Image 1 (cartoon, each protein chain N blue to C red):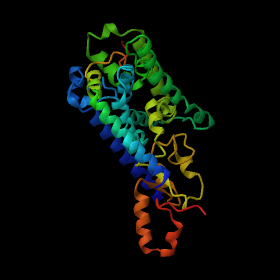
Image 2: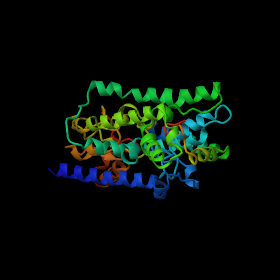
Image 3: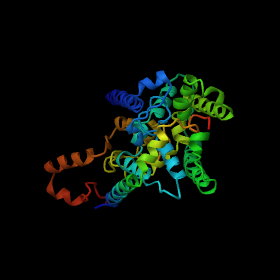
Image 4: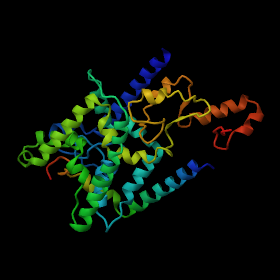
Length: 310
Length: 46
């Protein structure tokens, strides 16, 4: 009972962080009234989560849009700046960004709270989760590079044909607020609006469907899952392999902290053995245990603080 | 040092080097130039 209460409390805290980050990313509230976008210096820096830089409220750049834009500048200029930002964000936070710092993730989670029948995860969803890597390879990397090298002009494939965050946060508000943009909204706007509506509708029945199957930013951060500094991990010494952590998870995880884990931390409070720890906690606990344990036990621990498998 | 720590160090070094080199070659300005104009592709017009 306490475990469930702790889980609900942690979920509430996570929602507050998600909401705060969404507000921080879009703190240019005046833009929503004027229908113009922010032009200050922070726009040269990317936020960690998916947040369109053409949203009237956005105060910083979108990492995916910036990556495609930087790839379009090749071969004259390598996309080092944005790759450096993505590497450092991935290393520090990994998919914790998806769980805590992505406004579009928050929208999907809120939609999933609408009561009704829900699609259960399974082999189908696990297989479909590979689709986001194809979206990353084709729409984020290949299309901008192809146009940069052959046509010599930028074409951000993901932003143009797929991104529902761009439509929801940028397209719809700007077209609604700026009369000059309305006549320009043609088939592409209709396609993107329909796709965005379909994705959001699907999210009512399927937990974080966009993140699981389509999001190329999640695909990028998932590459850092094994090395991210702040992440939930399993203490192999305590885990008895009951599998409750993966069953309670809405994502297509096979194990806590794998490529599909968005580090929401729900599993931590449900684990009956208390085997799931966050980031540096284990090292701290281990140090505390070491001070009261038999010195002989130290011979069975590795330098990294993890017990060696016998 | 474990393999994970080595990978973390290598990634941190690469990430920092990329960021500094990228900023030096005008990456910040490129990002800024795109982000302060309405992206027609993003909003479904261009």
